[in-house]
Length: 408
Image 1 (cartoon, one colour):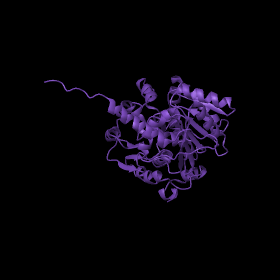
Image 2 (image 1 turned 180 degrees about the horizontal axis):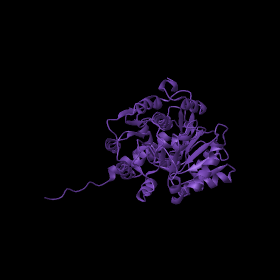
Image 3 (image 1 turned 90 degrees about the vertical axis):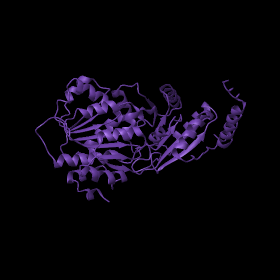
Image 4 (image 1 turned 90 degrees about the horizontal axis):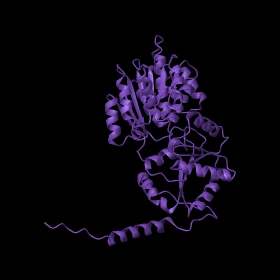
């Protein structure tokens, strides 16, 4: 199948060609016709599979088919859980709409509210926003959603995790007329998503491209065992200094650890910067700009960057800290292996990380391969350590005194 098969306007096909898209990804092939037919959709697909273009292209085609110039109010609302993802979506809107007139604005936290109220005085067809800031501007009557005809909610599972569900519902309740709706998510599993979809969508077409625990097939995953902190640092340096590593994200579970790892990498003359949630938006954008332009080789990040960082050239994702949950792991490694490119996901595992590793492997329904670097071999094996842990656990259960039955 080709993009021409969707019967898109020539200016959209030109923009697609300019972006180097050769053929639709599976989620694009499934979702674009549904939205072009103006049906509601509930879509699930692994990260990095082209979800953004899957809803942006039908939106742009709709605006071409139904031109209206009488109102300055937005006709399309795209909601994102995070600022980073909102900027990514807005960039795709501008890229795919580069040969036409599709005025759009972005509203997120991290900027002065007065700046954003000024933006909203401009004519705009497409409004990309995070729920919290948009709700605040609505309360102060700076934005009117009465003219909305299409609503897209991206990464709905992340929104629910962040507690944004009630805010999103309140925003949609303020739209007085019927609208076409699309709900996109990395996973469709769980009652939360089901209830969310029932409240928002009307007889939606359901598209599930991958099982919830799947990751992109082109990502090569591996585990490297580390004896201690110094050993882990040595393995990390070896990996990022290898010629195959062109651009890497190193994930840490906490801000303090991310800062510590960044300072250590810099002490080894490795080009690195840190990204975490305490930076104001302008600083975040400047750091990401340097990373994307390859002025910085390694970005050490907390999970603030786990979603919405859309870069095709990231070759490595390195989990310096193993995440606590399998879905977080999926989103982290999804920063590499995008758009049919091969990526590498590496997990640095000390003994105290084994519990988290077991959770992830259970989520993936597979064991991750353990690899070694010559000269940096660990002093323990995964198999023997897991055996000892199980034996110790069994022994502690046996020693635990039984509770006495209460006398009647």
